[in-house]
Length: 352
Ligand code: NAD
Ligand code: TYD
Image 1 (cartoon, rainbow, N blue to C red):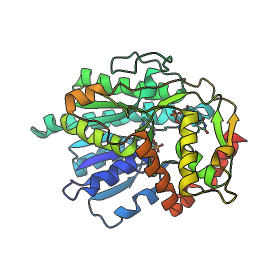
Image 2 (image 1 turned 90 degrees about the horizontal axis):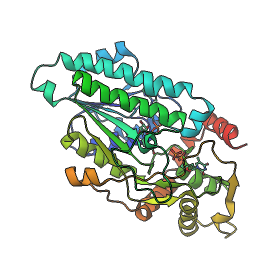
Image 3 (image 1 turned 135 degrees about the vertical axis):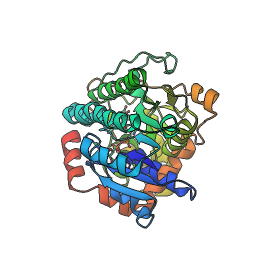
Image 4 (image 1 turned 120 degrees about the vertical axis):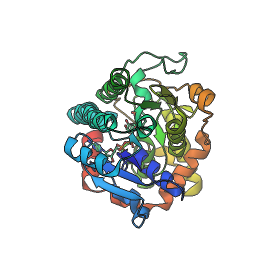
């Protein structure tokens, strides 16, 4: 078995679905606290799959994690669980420190105890894979080279600072205790099952609902977009072949300014689901107050993972964004499920 944390969230959920889509794949324990970002509807199709065991709980709960590890004896752990939204970290950083730093620390300690007691060959085959972000490297100038794995850590938001701290803990548990760890730092993901507080799903759904499409500041901030299915395949590759203690940057080679991303979504919607009044969705674009401390540019140099492990993304931004828009059009029931009470409270807090 493998143990996945945060597998009811956006990337973890996609990873669980992709993993179990392979009929030969081993079983998977999915430990998730079900915060506002956790959604069991994403995992509905696994209802009758005996290889999927969902456990509602916190990565920081040592008693629970110890019991899970002893009962199920996973050969690997993939840690997706985190508080992940920069804007929420600005409103309230405490949960970010608690889950991303303290939670990761507690998880590492539970895993270290389990791993220490393993017999060979299980002990040397065991892996702890930590999923992190390019945001730990800080912000790039317009002509700076993309982030490599040796770029200095310069996190600027409470979110990225808490993820940076978790990366350092994972690194230290490798160097000090020999825990067999792997870390991946990836760029902005997009795709199916993305909670609509992040730019791409928010814009798709606001457009369809006739609401403003909020662009922070001048909309010229650049992100390097990675289709979530590509991210999942990269994680499988690193888990299988990555070198212990190493970090791998995962990116889509797709740098885009936010305004261009939003315009592209509008054009696809004009084609797939034209407005009733036949006007262009682009008319809904609204410039709003910028995010405090807003990082200007992220870009990932993903050449190490290609050179050493042979991984490259399959999707370009143009193919991935079209699939994503189509997915939101095809899945109104999932969308209705997430767009409930607490989500509406967030929209008022952030945009009113
Ligand atoms: P998400 O917010 O959609 O999902 C996080 C999941 O973790 C949720 O299901 C939530 O219920 C769960 N969770 C939160 N706290 C927990 C706890 N204490 N114990 C157990 N479960 C808990 O996040 P995501 O976008 O799927 O991101 C997954 C990972 O990838 C995160 O570590 C994030 O930092 C990293 N990452 C995300 C992106 C991105 O673009 N989304 C980019 C780079 C890195
Ligand atoms: P987001 O999806 O929150 O990801 P991150 O902050 O982790 O990069 O935001 C992506 C970019 O889009 C970021 O530069 C902020 C910007 N943005 C907007 O312009 N408007 C919005 O309403 C949101 C949510 C984000």
